[in-house]
Image (cartoon, rainbow, N blue to C red; front, side, top):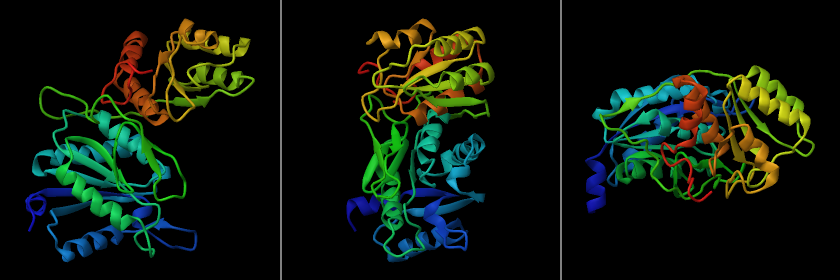
Length: 330
């Protein structure tokens, strides 16, 4: 047995199965979550030997299709990790790919002071199908959970990716995720053990700007929502028109935080670069730099859950927690 295999066999892991494609079977209505599928694959891999870690399995009930995932599901997953943190050397979370990026960002922000690796994975084809990608992803995730640095990671298609920088980039290919390089690890630093932060259910709008403005939609959000994630053009420009101006003014008056991110998958924004983005600065929008829309949404939900006045919310949104943005590069 190699030294690496020795380390793996001495490692105690908890796998948390939440649902998703990896554990689905065919039904008359299409693929649907089913109990026992992932457990059978773990048993198969353990039976093969070769220096596998000591793996324990916990299945969330009910299993979820990730399209139906909610902030309460983030709380359920983080709650298991928090309760079991000192019992295991690492954690693997199997999850559906549609909202995996949201859950990865949520776990990264929720688990302050995390001292173990948490590795999310899933698949584009179920384990119940031939030539699936789930077998490899699961084996790679177990390996990563034995060797990665503390933090929340995503293991997919042979790559270990930053949990707070991840985004789904393809709806069919096995290599379905990407993440830009990060200034810091996918870990929220803490000072006194592991602290868990829950997510509430504030009403957060995620709105893209489009040619012509979509000002009426933004105006409605400013009047009714608790927070707004605004997906801007390029490096942070939006249409300047009376409706947009009115919407941003109302958001300021109602003390509704607005965070601006880019519609571009890489590069991020830098408010103040172009005059067409000055309207955002005038109305106190937070510069999201190169944060993904998934991370921006999760961080907005967390900010509103923790509370505070709008100045405190903007400050929380603007300061990196866990490598989710590279503000110096934006």
